[in-house]
Length: 139
Image (cartoon, rainbow, N blue to C red; front, side, top):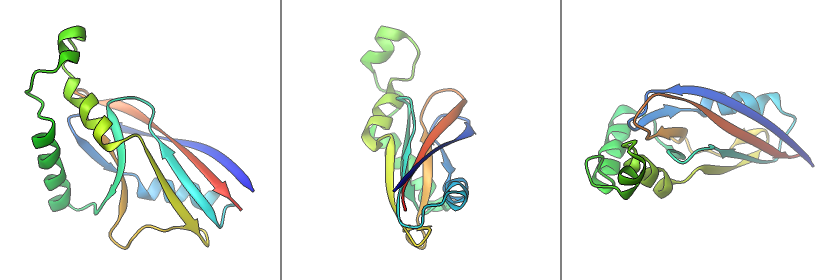
């Protein structure tokens, strides 16, 4: 069994920026020697998350609107009162979705559905360079 660690970096605009990572993750997997196993993705930080979605403008906009209804930016957040940085909503949003994904690999391919892409959601209130840790394990 092999374990390989890589990382990719993406620039975001913040404010629920949703970025398709599928191509970059596929490239990292292709460069690995793993044919059967798993890809685990993790984003360090508490104001961004990872998930899968059909990455098309309608669904992306629907997701943004839904997230805004669940954890609106203009609510009172105790985090903002304590730290004054105005991004309490981004911490709550990231916690609801989560920082990691685990995707099985079969015959050198991630087992994503036909319309399923890996996405980063950056909820912070400013642009950021985000680091995504990729761990590929298997044989």
